[in-house]
Length: 263
View 1 (cartoon, rainbow, N blue to C red):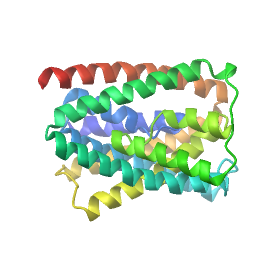
View 2 (spheres, rainbow, N blue to C red):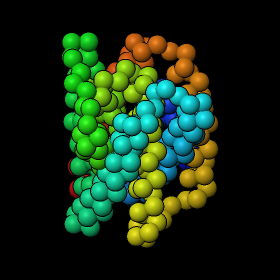
View 3 (cartoon, rainbow, N blue to C red):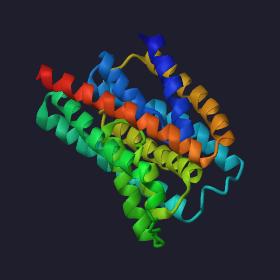
View 4 (cartoon, helix red, strand yellow):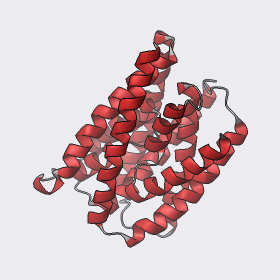
């Protein structure tokens, strides 16, 4: 099972590196589907894997002085996303305590993710007809960052596919620029998320060997995904992204039905 998690983390991170979604949006639904562990453990391991992948990708972008990362808006987005990550984690823990049933929480996560991904797919398919309305103020960027970080952290996916839609519409980023900024947002929000879990002793019991393998898969997948992304144009990235969204929607439908059936 641990080897399967390694392969999944690698493949998901390759795709995530290309599309700018971190890979957790693939890892978590698939692990949910196969019953790898409890909802809490899967969310934690998925977030750690995405953190490792985004750390490599963003580190490379910074070292190469990528123009995609603006010192103004990108930094505000990422820092506010970190605060949003803390908020999303707190909401997750609060709802988890209130429901006292991981299956119901898993169903809620799957349904919410499905709705967000359907909206993302509709936007992506009509992207050429939609005129972006870039937000210029730092306060506006901060609000956007908080919402993105909160949603991703609560869903336990590390980075949502909706990041790219928001970055395109509200900041006017093209696909590849949105990918790099999305990974930057994911990185800081997941660092904050992990620190909060450690400080509040909310880390669920997990298999260290499986997590290490997943992290190895995340980093290696990020290396491959970044290399592939550099060779693709914006239109190809959009097409791959749309196909991925259809797969995620199908996984969400299956997982929601599975969790609700077992309640």
